Image (cartoon, rainbow, N blue to C red; front, side, top):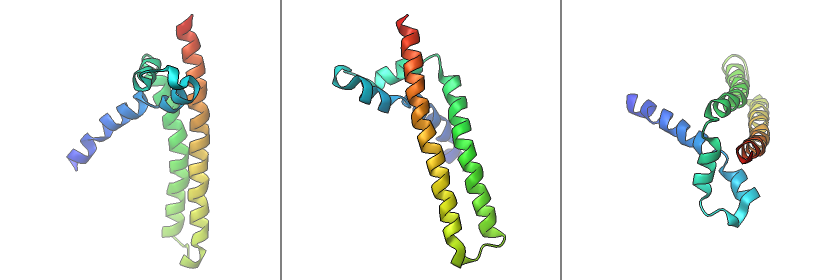
Length: 116
């Protein structure tokens, strides 16, 4: 159990460090020789803000999924499993779209801030 948990913190660090990688690749394209380093440089100094925003964006879908599991445990009949699937779909849609917007806004704000 400990060894599994020991990988969570480094995984979160890497996730935050390279969370702007997709935006860097799309907006800067081929002119950026090291997109991993560029993502890391943009996030440097802003990791607390990014971690807080990602935590909020991932916590709300987690609550939706947890409520679906409770619903399944305490009274959902298996012929009504479509309701749980709809909750899962809602949770993933709720998490992915705002996260994409968050990374784009963070990129624009932090790169214009470093250029000044």
